[in-house]
Length: 198
Image 1 (cartoon, rainbow, N blue to C red):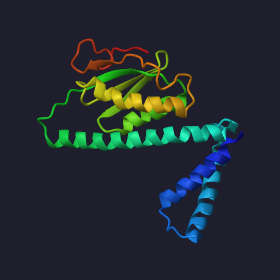
Image 2: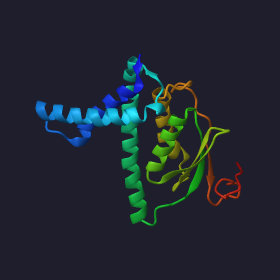
Image 3: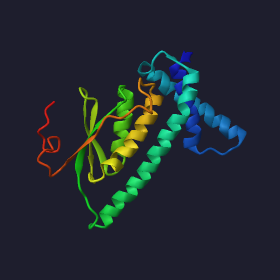
């Protein structure tokens, strides 16, 4: 076990090398790594109260593949959603059938819920509107609510990875709660119609 904030600072220093796009010479790599270490450790130390006191190096290594898969899945969804929204914008004949989808979650930690909610919002065509703490449900607005499976599929994949990344109680193979779509024009769409109380 080790303190978590120095590990985060080290990760930020390594990330700094990729962000800066450094020449692959030993001297430049070392210089930029030292700068990244100074910046990363400073930021990690300043925000150290947000981390738990101890972190497991083995746990971090176990989580790394899932974090990579989460990022790759998110980037793919971001790319395909951008293309889809651009097509809908340039071809007005394409259907726009907005709906609010209730997405009950398996993840429970605030960090995992926030990560998934932000991933949804950053993806064009979808927006996380609200979160119900009592039912652990996200309310997601989509420009095309006719394809419920198409909306849920990336969210469920992100959630599978988040279950491991955030060390949740449930595991990726556990069944997901049933989601429900409420169309914008539906009289039963309490969420979309503003009748939801809470």
